[in-house]
Length: 247
Image 1 (spheres, rainbow, N blue to C red):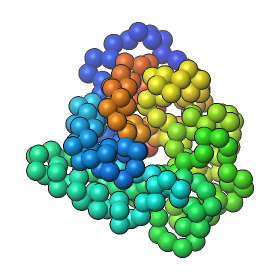
Image 2: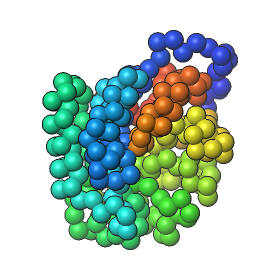
Image 3: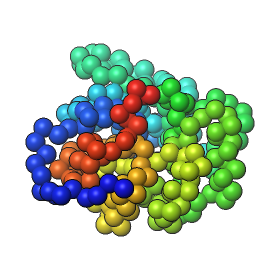
Image 4: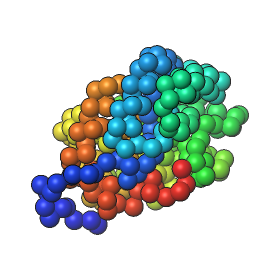
């Protein structure tokens, strides 16, 4: 286990997210979920991400049966609109698209019926739980994801109040990677979420960090995160998968 920094007040001069390069969880595609509502907002968010050193973006709009009924077609259409605008404005950053799937019965059905929107050489598949309770028989769903050839990634485990570090470690040992929101470490989602995110880092139960960018308040918190000792640890000491060539 990594210890805490000996000098918690160490300077962050020169530190930026270009150490990780890829932001693999964001809602920057225009007009298809609760993130950017139009392409001008998309551009604002992308500029903010570039300002802190992000060099590649994988947009992951929600797919949720009762709220965001996105499909590969709606997502790819929004991606095309965004890419056109990036070209018009002379903004040079690779943007790809996958999805953030809500883990419910419709998600399990999709695993049997269609190719899901994954990313990277490992076919990473980003999904989220309800903030109220974990799905029943999730171990069965996890096996289905892996049997279908995907490498599951659970989005923001620190935000599920019913979770423990031990449960996260158990899922990780079963083949489910963990992605922590950088903004959680700023206290944006509350003190308990911040504490839990720090505990996950202390116990080496984090594989990815990302912005989960929805709007400019997230962009401000993302920038603020650069001054935090735990974020510095993640960017300089931690074995994050963003430090590999898999994305």
